[in-house]
Image 1: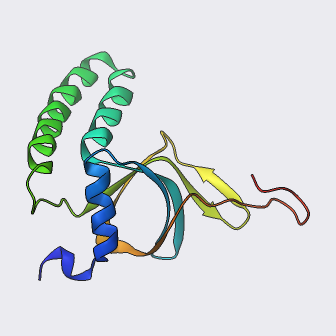
Image 2: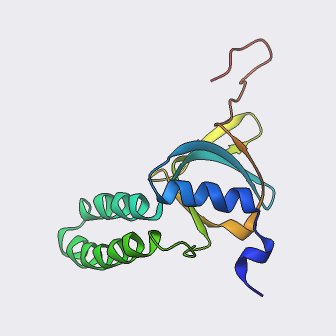
Length: 136
């Protein structure tokens, strides 16, 4: 069975838009966890990972950079193909929402399988700290 058999067609379309440069804020429900952030494309995700890892360890950064450059080129070539879908989605400024808290993820990038998303909404989630408080 193809991975798209269990993936929402609208979510797949949004991922394709992001892969082609249309970034947007989304909130996802993934197996009971709420994750919010900016939906970004494959190429942008790889560029962000490369930039962040390169700055930490120079030797390791060069090896990782070479690998990620190849992956970025692959994604860039395949993104133009009408039928190409990775089956994954990528968020920047990703946060998990737990109760009344937003917990930023280390490095703020998140990658997940589109088929694992149970539901989504447009926009990022606003959390009230206490009753009567303004949304943050």
